Length: 325
Image (tube, rainbow, N blue to C red; front, side, top):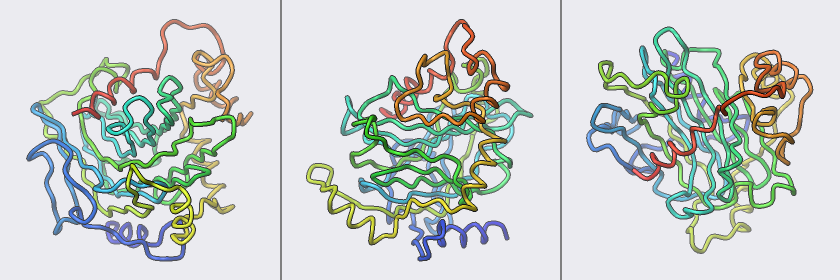
């Protein structure tokens, strides 16, 4: 079955050549919020998070990590999902309120007949005024079956994967300074009501007639350097990362697949958004082909013509509210 295949894929990760253990919920996680809206299945190997009129729900890793490989197979709610947000992300916002780091996968629901959208985002040192969003369509329906979503975070780069295909590579540059995520983070998974911004800027809201909305998580992987947040040593974790074989090398075959994915499915990248940035942020590497394709896709945002009102700004305020639940 596809589920078994995904399970096998998830333990032979990204060509690392060694088995990475899948944890049961109790081995690695704790409930974050949501009371009975978090339910364990398959002897704790799977977690269902639901959103209803009363509350959303979420879980968080028991440890904080400095670098590592973090993954889950996720199946999203089906049918009418406008306003629903499912997030799988790393953050230390509860410890570093003014200068937190974050690495996000966010899934944005949609009206019936329209596909889920997915965005990735990165913040370092509280640099929330520089949203580093990219947004994509998918080549499959993420509500039909489980698909694996992965973050690989090292001291030099961050790679996002879907089903072991890299979709985004974010390299640390000297010019970024502290804007690169570099403090220990917890891993989170949540489902919540993002009606105010998630679907067409808030035009379509969550309709609780279709509740409960259930996001299913399995194949949970926490493979990194667990640290004491007060006394952590990056040297220790660099050594650990090497022993864990956390190689951030993208093979030629993977790079070809990544280029293909971005060419076909990327619909937004902050690096090319000329309505937000007259000059691209320092870490951006401009790809002329991406620039040209996005300009054809949305000439207002990516062509530099003046336009009223700014899009893509809403996620931060709403997400930080969710983080404080």
